[in-house]
Length: 309
Image (cartoon, rainbow, N blue to C red; front, side):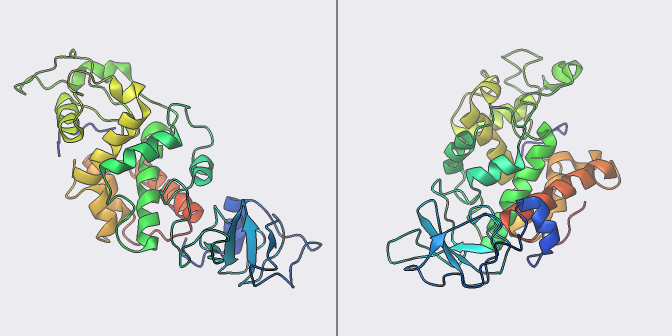
C-alpha cells in the first residue's frame, strides 16, 4: 500500500526438479524422444511429457521452437530458458536468440500471466496491461533479455503482493479512505476527502499521486480517481507510471532498481519504504521476494542480487 507521501527479479540453470513444479509436465519413460527432429522439415508437433534433447525442433501452435536445453516436455511458450523461437525461413516465428515471440509484443505471454495469477479478478485483464505498455516503452525493453524478463517479474511480483494476486481492485481497509487527502495541496481534494484510497495494481493512493499520475498520463485523475478502479488500461497505466518514474519512499524507481542492477530490494523500498524495509516488516519483504523468485522461474530468467531491503 502506498502510504508514504511521495510523488515522485533460482538461477538460470535452475534445478529441473524445481522447474517441474512450476511448469507441470513430468517425463514419461514411455515417451522419450531420442530421435527428435533437429530440422524444420522433419519437425513434429510438441507433446507434453516427451523428453526433448537439446537441439530438438518442434511445432507449437503454428510456430517453431528449438530446445536450447534438454527438458521433459516443458511448454515452449512458458519455458523460455529451455526453448527459443526458431526461424524456419518463414515457416514459423522469426527471431531466435531469446527474442520475444509473443504476439502482443510484451515479454510476458498471456499463458505466463495466467500462470502467475490463476485466481485474478477479471478486471485485471492481460489486454489491459498490454494496452498500457505504450505509455512507458522502456519498460521490459531495456537491457538484456535476462534483465527485461527480470523487470517484468519484479513489477508483477510487487503488483501481486499489493493486490493479493491481482484479486483486490481497491484497498480493503475502508477506515483508511479519509486519510489520503492532503488539504495542504493547492488543488485540494475535489473528488472528496475519501476518494483517494488505494486503487489498481500498485494501489495508488493520496490526492497528490492522483494529480501527478493524471498529469503525466493526460487523464484527469484528480477529479476522476474512480477511473483507476473502473478502466483496466488506465489502472495498469497508473501502476506503470509509478514503477517507471517514481522513487516513492526510496531512492530510485522500480524500473531503475532492476535495469541498473541495484536489485529487487530497492523496488520494494520505493513502494513501501521503512514500513517494510530496514526491519520494518521482514515477513512482508520475504513474501515479495518469494513471489519474485517464482515469477523469474516462470519467465526463465534469474533474480539477480540484492533481493531484500
